Length: 243
Image (cartoon, rainbow, N blue to C red; front, side):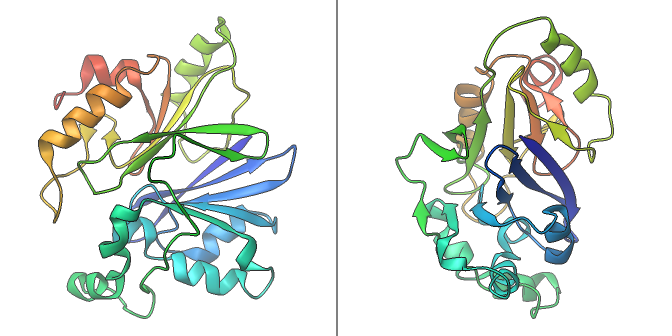
């Protein structure tokens, strides 16, 4: 699997494109804005899945625009759109949020409801991969992280940890299952955590989510956050001042 990262929106959010090269399926994660740039990463591939970690404007603000663009080239009714039902209030008010931030409201449209709710789900399939779902509320209601397990444990993992924590995090990642990856959304960042001063946030709930769902993952897990550079679970256990 190839994982591509692009920074979008005035909020500098990391949107991602996952490409299963064996099936040529393509998933877009958190299309917050700059839809043309995100689609350029897809290299004209068929988009089969869209995954929303949570429904804040910087992560879902471009979803309707994305669907409008895709509707010109493919059947969008066949696209799996994943999100949690708890984010519905945010999705219904994207345009209002844009106005409150002074953003161009023509670029931030209210987001449609997902075709598949993540409520009570523990995993989803993407090509040949099984993606584990981790319910991690606190920064936002219905926040869900994605975990890609490693297939085995070997010395190659140590080399990958050193590589991933030091390289340019806009380079493509070739996930070969030799080390685990967490797409954490805005729950966990490098030496930081998601903010909890927004509507419907809960600080104690976020800390519980991180400690019971994320910090229990293998320490060599590469963390791809919703903002900022990559990190590892081991680094956050040892260095994150909020934890």
